[in-house]
Image (cartoon, rainbow, N blue to C red; front, side):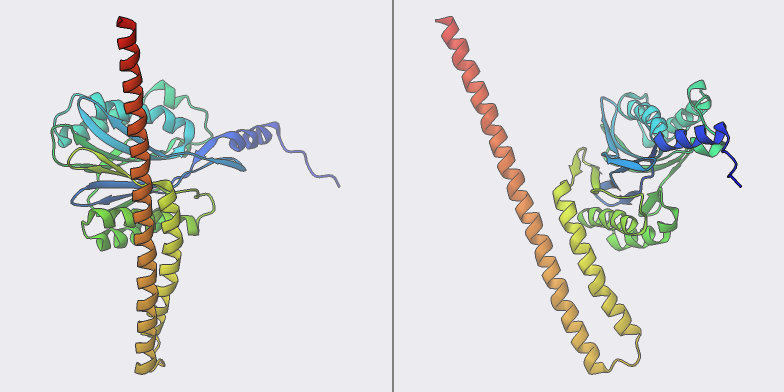
Length: 314
């Protein structure tokens, strides 16, 4: 008996799903005394294929500054993100309370528009999008993080927040609390969260993008090469700390052996920390060298331009 042919509708549906850009993002937001840190993976799927993109978008203008990470269908995210950017950069708001209200109004309006309502879909859930939005007013001294679930907007109150991977919520909140408002530790916490998601989910991957919107009005963007190296160290640290957990809970481990394990763990963790400090120092030297080279190029361009102008006036 021959199998029944699949209907043309099912074939068309499979074809549509195979090419639709599905940005299944893990994006983490960490609050600290310095500002708000957002981190995301860079994997973007096209059915059975994929590419890598930066999923964190920044916004700056006369009104405010911000950073945006998103999760959902790529075309919808591309449509909505510029609207949020314009609201942050040039919107008519002067306080973060006003910004939250206007962001709520914007998302409710966008989901009523013909553009989104007519977007091809088989069920309403395919229109679902998520955003992490960090924003500050140009004259303000505070950055806040907002969580957007389609047309719903709330302010983040936990030190650690995640979109795209709900099962990681408890882990994210624990990591956020461990960061304890320390700015540098917040960036490492964000890195650890995305790294953990990459370990658990096959459709999350690539390098980790990390951006901190500072209360003082600037950005701190982690270098991609640096984060890739730190991820390897995070794996090593996890394996070491697992030994401590098991040895602590195992009542058959003698006090003497337990002390030996603690000494071994201490040595290993100090070695990992030494490598992390070396990575940071090396990247700082490389960035300083790049900046010096760029400065020399600009100075040479200005000197040549001045020389040409003087020569033309003779």
